[in-house]
Structures are given as structure tokens and as C-alpha cells.
Length: 268
Ligand SMILES: Nc1nc2c(c(=O)[nH]1)N[C@H]1C(S)=C(S)[C@@H](COP(=O)(O)O)O[C@H]1N2
Ligand SMILES: [Mo]
Image (tube, rainbow, N blue to C red; front, side, top):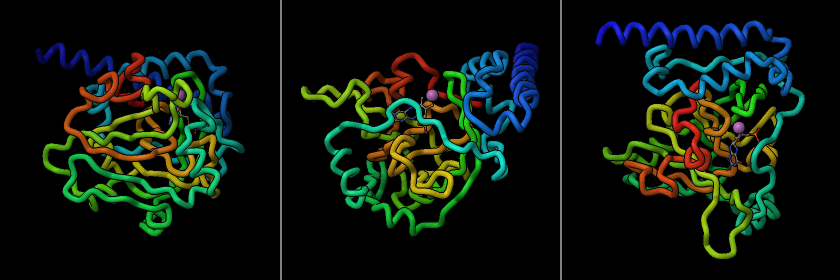
């Protein structure tokens, strides 16, 4: 048992090394833009293999309180690429968007002592965190952006999750099969555990590169959970729900892409 454990740890260390090596080899100049890294095949391959690092493995190689790397303003890409939904056509979203998101409210509920709603102004009045980080999409591209938002932990402190709450589920506006006429729910959703929810770099961002979050990047509010891959970064967040398990939600795997076969823990 001990031997297997050590071997496993050594392999995981190698993998992390590979990933770090590929990033270092790409050089910080190359990191400044999107797409450029995707031309580096070994980087893409290691990125894809990183998706399979289990949560336990990631905990071994880097304890979760560890910070994701933060970059300098010079590293920020001119334009942050958009991916997945870029402008939801769902009626409730369109109505909010057309009113400049003035009527937006983030609903936070589920297994909490004190369910609450937050307007954008209320969220912006809370202490803000700004961070320059690299977004890594499994499709093989990366992009560095400067995000500003409120820590998810601060919101949780206000609603007070019940002891049995284990996960935070993000409910998004955008239907992945297009707006539904028959009640079929294909809206994007995601989930993270409470460790990641309380991580200092886990924020609900309302600004990207010193401007209001663009629609293509998830306006008015999107999650940044910096130690995980792109698909975990829920855009167009409509509501947050504290749950004990996500087995009863949709496909039961904890997220739109997870239901399609992606790993629930998209660690990098
Ligand atoms: N609501 C929602 N969130 C989403 C997606 C989406 O289609 N809808 N795509 C995910 C994927 S795969 C990526 S890579 C990032 C893209 O974020 P960006 O558009 O800001 O680049 O958002 C993630 N979050
Ligand atoms: Mo992605």
C-alpha cells in the first residue's frame, strides 16, 4: 500500500513537472495572447492529461489552499477570447441584457440558514478582489485576463451554509440546446465543493480588464475558480444553490460538460 502510494505520488509529480515544463518552455511572452499556446502540441497534450488528475491527486501535489499563479498587467491579452455561449437567447436573459442588467439579482439558496438575493450594486459594494490569471480551456487554448469581483466566500458567509451543504451549484442563464419551448432544461450549470468555494481566488467577477464584464465572457456575473479548467468557470450566473449532493440534478455529474463526460474536478 505504502509502495503504491509513493509510486502514485511520483507519477503525479512527474505529470505536474511536465505541465510546468511545458508552460515554462512556452515562455511568458507566448503566454500574453490567446491561441498561441495551442500551437504547442505538447502543451495541449499535457493540458488534456491534467484534466485527469483526480481531486485527490491534486491535493497531494498541491494542497488546495495553494494559489493559482497570478501574472502582471503586461501579460494580459489584448482581447479575452470568448468560448461556448457568447450571447444567450433565453428570454429572461435577453430582457435583463436589454435593460443593461439593471434588474439583475443573484439568488443564493438551497441548504443555507438565510437565503438571499444580491443586486449587482450590492455585489459591487462588497470588498472586491482583483486577479490576473490564466484561463486554460481543454480545447487547447489559454488566455490571461484581469478579473475583478466579490469573493464567493464572502457571499457564503452571509447566507450561512447548513452543516450538510457540500457543494455550490451555479445555475446559468444560457440554454445549450437553444432556448426551450417545451420546458426541457439544457441551461449551463456547474458545481464546486466548499473548499474551492472558500478559496481566496474564487470570485464572482463583474469586471474583465478594467471594464464591465462583456456579454461574450458571461455578463453580468461569472465565476472564476482559478485552479480549475475553463469549463468550471460558469458564465451568466443566474442563481447559486447549496446542495449536499448533485446526484439528483440533471445528468447527476455536477455540470453541463460533466454530464457529457468531462471530469468533475478539472484541476490544473
Ligand atoms: N454559462 C456558461 N458558462 C461557461 C460556458 C458556457 O458555454 N456557458 N463555457 C465554458 C467553457 S468550456 C469555457 S472555456 C469558458 C469560456 O469563457 P470565456 O468565454 O470567457 O472565454 O466558459 C465556461 N463557462
Ligand atoms: Mo472550455
